[in-house]
Image 1 (spheres, rainbow, N blue to C red):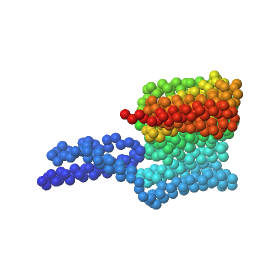
Image 2 (image 1 turned 90 degrees about the vertical axis):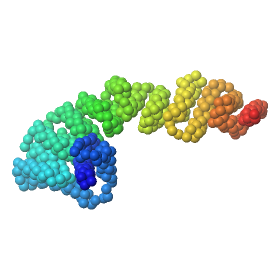
Image 3 (image 1 turned 180 degrees about the vertical axis):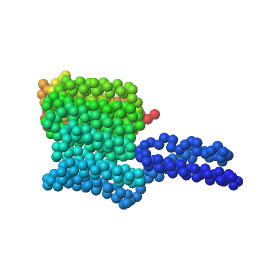
Image 4 (image 1 turned 120 degrees about the horizontal axis):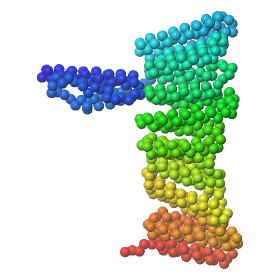
Length: 558
């Protein structure tokens, strides 16, 4: 019995030790996903009979550890000071160094070589002190010191090159690249997003810190593109998502600053969209490769598409824009047959915007409404089927705007005209989108059908009015009103018949509503303008129809 108790106590101690080890791993690896953190060979085989279910115990311990680590902690003033105080004062220190360089240059306190050497010495001291702080597990202070050394090295190089003319642009450029590589090495070695962010900002600013009499814009574009590729590989490898987003943003800011402040030649302007296009392709490749984090890449890719198209639309010719849209659409459509699940939904979202851009660029103004109407219908169908809320929103927005333009701005002047086709397309597409919504959306069917029937009734009345008045515009006004009233009565009777025969109560009530609306139109709008004989005809006809409908509502008792 004592031996069994001793064995059980040993097992408990082992499990407690491994749970503690698991917590340390989760803390150090941050966002790295845990894969089999607890070794399967925990208990020696000599322990004998009292072996617990190791897989169940391990799973429970992992869940407990994760829950404890993810539980929000109360505000800790000491931790807050440890985090933000060094960040604040390293910034103050760097500003002081900049002013020191400026003051020493203005008043001649020291020779330029001494000032530059002092800047490199201070930077080295920050690196060394930061290294020892990291070894003593003072991570936040160490990150700040190491991160402050990189921009200080770049500022010293800038002073050496621009203020004191101690080196040429090539030497300054190479030195700045060395400092960026040091920052990138520290980012990877310590897995620090703070160091990565500082190195990324510094790397993007390097070309702006170089003063050259004959600047080469192609070198600038190539450098910024290569730098983005380098940081993209690092941040994706270590899942530094804030830097992932920031790199994409600052990359485009650098290109925008180059365009605005350097006034490049026309041939150079045409080249600016190339790096942005490469950026879009690189993010697309990451979306294809990374199955675990599709949404990080998907929505970044969508933003990149907006920026890419803005650059291309501003800089390229119409033929080049059309070629870009066609090639992009074909490539993404092909990927949809290869990529599955969530990534396919994100690719379809890209296709949605490509189709919208294509319509806006290629289709003529007279056909905008029809193109956007059909595109919105297709996009909504895809969104409903793939359960993509954003896709459905884009589709219904595109469809609704196009339909509203047709209804309120495209009056039918001739019964056999393009406007008539547009109206018929609105009605047919509305029925289609209603069917899609009823099939894929989880809504209250009764309320949904009531709302849809109200809209469809309004569309049918509006179209019948437009079409009828266009067809009888050569007749007298009294005759036009007479014919239009009979058309409304016919639609009301048709809706009631459909509702009664198909047991579709919403259509039945919609028909009654149209019949009442016809009576109101006849009394308040037509009556003052039609002679008594026509009044008699209309009222008799409407009365007969109303009585017939009333009779139809009675059910024969069995």
